[in-house]
Amino acid sequence: MAINITFLGHAAFLLDDGNRAVAIDPFLTGNPLAAKKPEEIRCQAIVVTHGHADHLGDTVAIAKANQATAYAAYEITEYLQSQGVNVEPANPGGRVSTDFGWIALTQAFHSSSYEGRYMGMACGAVVHLGGVTVYHCGDTGIFGDMKLIGEIYRPDIALIPIGDRFTMGPELASRAAELISPKVAIPMHYKTWPLLAQDASGFKPKGVEVKVLEPGESWRYG
Ligand code: NI
Ligand code: MN
Image (cartoon, rainbow, N blue to C red; front, top):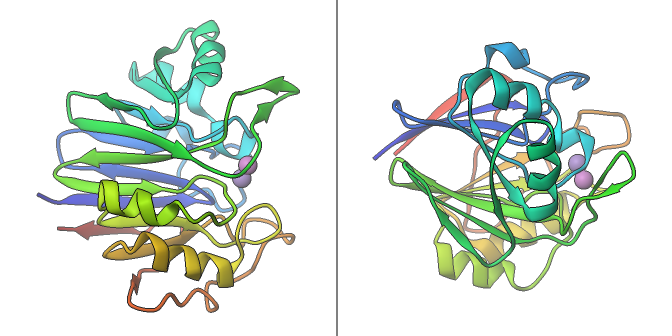
């Protein structure tokens, strides 16, 4: 029961249990921190938290190259399907069984559009792979039900945006990590552009281990 977590830069991650790989928010083209090129990504599933270009990113190209299935809010999967991508639509509160485990979407306090098109509700995603549960918060402000999400899914790892302005900053992200109470919290969505917080030094949740991954860095958990 172990997975490798690779931080691809910004909010993009690759989870791999040695057998199956899941990409989350694979924004690489145009990402100043991108650790890989889209054509280097090998995965069977892609999870998209919301429609903004810094999350939807290279989903279409990566999905087609890998014949991967995309999991996202209904409106995002409608768009992806129109682009020829295999999809599994969902929405917050639901859980979707997969051949490697399951994926559940959660709420996020944020917006969701792509090139002016409504993309449904912005979400977070909980991914269960290789016996490990990872909660990618998506882009979000803090909300009290993060505690409930933590209680229900008991994530081993939480991927938490700390960049401020469009999401929580380091201070509120620390509070969020305390609410979720994962075993390990990994900061994301910072340093990509000058508008975002430039380092993770202020991300100091009480009672939660913090693991800072540099873009391109892989870490084995479990
Ligand atoms: Ni966003
Ligand atoms: Mn974003």
